[in-house]
Image (tube, rainbow over all chains, first blue to last red):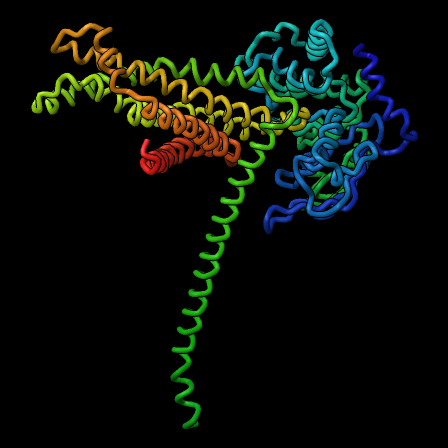
Length: 260
Length: 283
């Protein structure tokens, strides 16, 4: 049953032509009052790739992915996700689109008043409504095994460490088999070992669930471990776009300061 | 030269006039912005209320969460309301007895206490306590969910946070606070019986019979109706303040605090309006 639903969702991608972007952003602009956060951002995310968005704090990285899921409304520009223009969707349409997108928040954003199991059941009950109780339990068990935290089922979020919270949050995101993953600073606040583990987990998710991902980070190790392609934002604009190799070899002062 | 000199003398005055004009303009702009902010906030409140009503009558009502909130509001406030109710009845009895005794009206004590509790003291004091406990709880909980991005996480999980968080809490408060007030009234009357028995010997049955002989349906109905409004107001204010909390952790405290202050104030305002309406209808 779970496989059937995954196949149905993946059909959207199969239908799209090979090489066609799953996310396409054109001339995105967003301001908060007088503060211009994104000034003219255009980018594309292709099927099956991990796109890392680098940038200093306050460069508008998180705002960018919040615009993609419709949490923020851009001042100008077009965002197309799986062929649908996010700006033209009504609340129901946006809800349907969000079912295909996984969003890992910087803080993990686990529901404090719920156990790990209830946290994982929450999106399942709303997105995979036709699953039976047994199928749901199996799915939860499967994703917890994938993130290496099978024994955390009945724990409260307050009983988990920072790294464990990120893993559970990732499990909550992948439990509904998303096509696109958006990671907002997945390794922030974690020690180097746990950061590497989360980076590996991101790659595992990409391989196992065949997701296309945008990874927002300023952690170079995370970028090195996960990136197929890199974009750097500066002052609300795309500063440089290229492969990780090109970034590593760049003589630009700003990029060098990131990659030293 | 003679003509230019007076003009030069006027120059400092012109500069002062310019500074004065700039100050006035700045103050005018600030006041206009304040007025604009007030109107924006007012519109925001109206929008929040209309969205809550709209979501209340939409499909996919979160019944399980509604029951959970009823439990959180009702069951967890019960001990506090019990203590408050007993103290209300006890203190009112002890304080009123000497005054009534002066007129030889001791026998009126159960009736007087019962009417006072049911018509005014029970609803208002219980509502103020609920504004403190329930309102602050909602403000802090939703505020902290906002700060830790849990509300946004709900939205990206295709869940309507207004429906899941706000509608369930407002409805639970609207249902449970009147019930808590009825319970506080009953416990208060019991407290009054305890108060009377400190210096006397009256059976519970006789006390209740005397107390209820003075209560009419017209005492009970307006009090119950205003209790429903108290519940709605407390629920709305708590949710609004929490849901619209700022981004920092400091805003959680601000949300909880302003939920209590505004909630308590609105309870008193609703009470004044309810009393006026009751008086006009001569109930």
